Length: 179
Image (tube, rainbow, N blue to C red; front, side, top):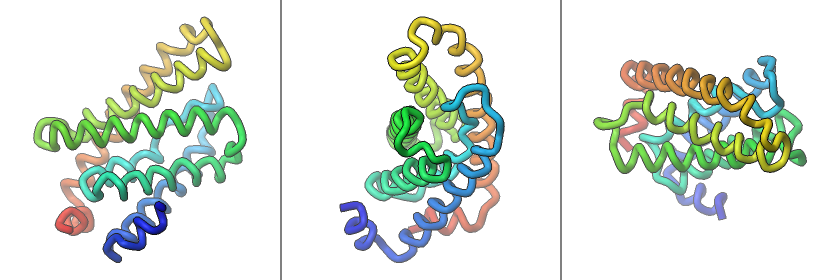
């Protein structure tokens, strides 16, 4: 189904999905090399292409990119058949849906990438904390929640700032939005 949908998309959007998908995988690889205190805790830099895609793609194509990111990241990190994949799947999916909904409902004039990035990071982290409570840590999740959420706020703001700067300066991005 997703391949059929992508085949019917304009050739330019297929190339853009491929480019942003490759960028997700590249950033996932970089992120994987950064030491982390918990196996499912990541900075979220692989979400940059998803944030950029918010203003480029319709929902169906955006979700194809999200799927590429989720599966590609799991293959790169070797977590496809582990509980960490569940954390990544749920966190990324709910984060992406939240970011897309907020961007569409409020618009770019009322909610910047900083707000979108922070909301996405918070949704991802809250989802992962709920899963950590259910499957791993139970009540001890309260010890990891404050630094986990604080890191999400910081990285959400940082990614949002980068996206604001990039989208304001990039001629490539301006051409993608025209379609």
